[in-house]
Length: 120
Image 1 (cartoon, rainbow, N blue to C red):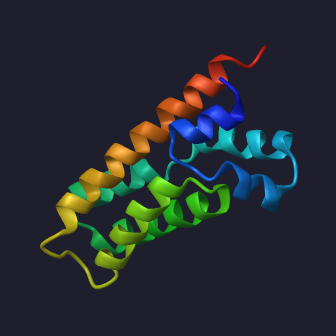
Image 2 (cartoon, rainbow, N blue to C red):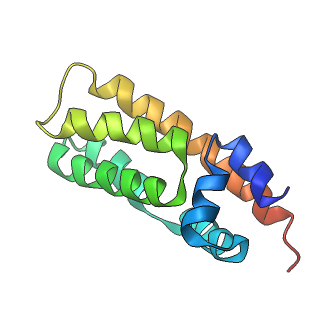
Image 3 (tube, rainbow, N blue to C red):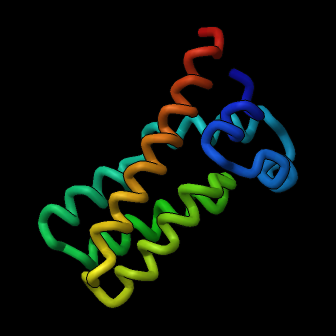
């Protein structure tokens, strides 16, 4: 899988990220680093513990990273979750968390496929 194909698979903005970071090598470096980011784990742990302030920070971090990397779909869902958590737990929170989880898994799957095709 090419980097461009990876962006198509995760519903991202390939042209936008290339314009911002200026090189495919640089974009690939940061895309692969996303696999090690612990923000989603923190979101899950915080939600399970009903620590909505920490969940807000985790979703805000996911949103920011996704905005920088042009992971459009995950950015949009994490943005909605961040806005929802800004004032604490709300009636839509659980559904928004499930959407972020779905989009996160799609993003990780695409990046792992990209990684699998990179020569060691």
